[in-house]
Image (tube, rainbow, N blue to C red; front, side, top):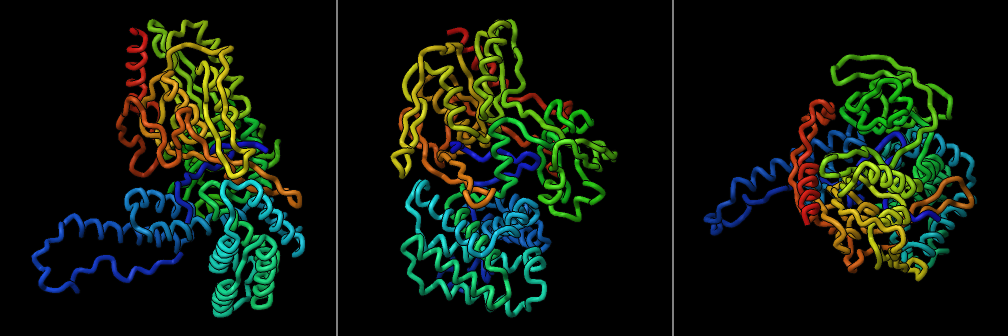
Length: 560
């Protein structure tokens, strides 16, 4: 089992995820003041309150329009941003939950590996898989499972699926809407009176619910059972998830540090695919694709006409196969490209250089923590040492995490002794204190750069440097993801699940969850993206104030 501290970005599509995971609210009243008694008329309502209410309603309306157009990736991004602005509004969390379920459903059904897996499972096999899923949760999950809640969340998942047009078109093209509505209501009533106290009772209830949907709608029981399976695991926390065969392969590829593809990182932008990053030496890089370009066609299909996940899935394929792309550059000039998919090595150490050769200030960026990271950092350290390194800036901004052991190994290079990180779980097997080893410790002064996207493994590393007073932390508060996940493949299928198995704590015993790492030197940043969300070309970027602050910190350390 691999122990991860965060989900890696997908091989070709990276989508932001928030600390919240996710119902159909109807806002009857947002602000009631007219009905107050006249005796309270002397209480003045600040103008800002009215502005806030209007802004909230506009934000909610914009999200609902995205939902009506079934733009689930865009809706997720919208609600995630809205939650930052209106953290107390439960309506946003509800819409985020619904959008998340639709988004995950679309991702599964545009994933050919999931569809093939689904078609190969009998009703009995799907129930056996569900049983295996519950067993893994019971054995490995960080807290005791609530069996009834797991089944209830599965019912919610199936309920939302029965409102999704993609799901209906595929499985229930001739079912009358009123029959679907009646079945949804009956499924919820069916569970209300059940007392589910064991894993077997939960499996029996799901089997009966699947039969009910089959009798009322003609829905194949396997389809219903799999919605219960996906709903159960995704309800556990923000990081536990069902992994399709292709997603499971992606995780293993990213752990190993390579995958077959084009070598690009994408995000949704106005119905197209915006290229955020291009790996050096990849097919995309050799084809002249740059950050800021947009993919507007994939094999002749406009990315406006298909979901972003389907378009991203179309970019994947076997090694040696080709894909035709329509690309629009930042200069708005279009071009056509034919690229061959190849195995791409994903570096976890980038941007190695001497920022100030005279002062000996060196720099490296860690983009993730994978199997090769420790070895790559060793090679870079010796190279920088030969170039006269006197202090080192390690940049983990935007680093979403990766392997727990890789983060420990990198921290161990700079921490002489003591605890690097401690993990604590429900199972005693998850309780472990990772210790530093004196042999091979580098004593070079450190500056570590963090931001709000530095998560989990990055925070393990930064917190170890912080608690051991081994360096200066510069930037913004880190994300605050303090849990460990394990990857568990199924015996009955090529798919698997990602489960939270433990929480981790800094060397001084501080939890990271919801807190993050606070920098010694805080640097306030303005947005670097343009208004429409496109990436500003490198030659237009302004100096990096975090790097500038880091250089100042490195120079101060050098004088000590």
